[in-house]
Length: 155
Image (tube, rainbow, N blue to C red):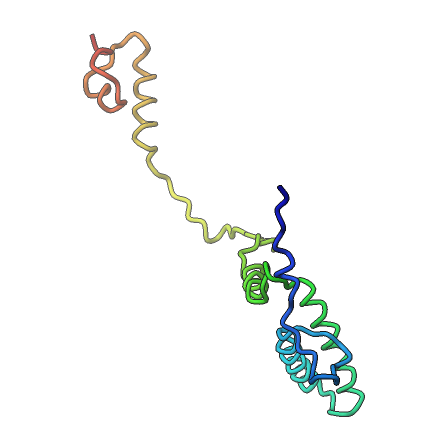
């Protein structure tokens, strides 16, 4: 038994060929016209921001760039990967957290470091005290509790 694949269903594109017997000389999906219009508008805004005046040649180059960009974008679009998923993926890639590679320099100023004689921490003081008493002495209940020792050590 041979199963037929359903790829033929997805090969049908929503394409407007034009009026009967007067078809357009190109094939373009409906989404291509929407993407192309958006790309053309963005290119026109960029040209005006760069100070390029509206002329025949600027519009001609914009139209050629629009066709090239739209073709490149729509090569990645099919029935499994829609244009909205591509835009969402692009947004996630741009907005993803990145590793900070800037060098950081920290410096210490000696005049801001306060030096004062202080007491040693309690644990260090008691350890020195116990070492001075010698190893032969048995720990008291107070010392055992402080060190977290069990009562069995004391017996």
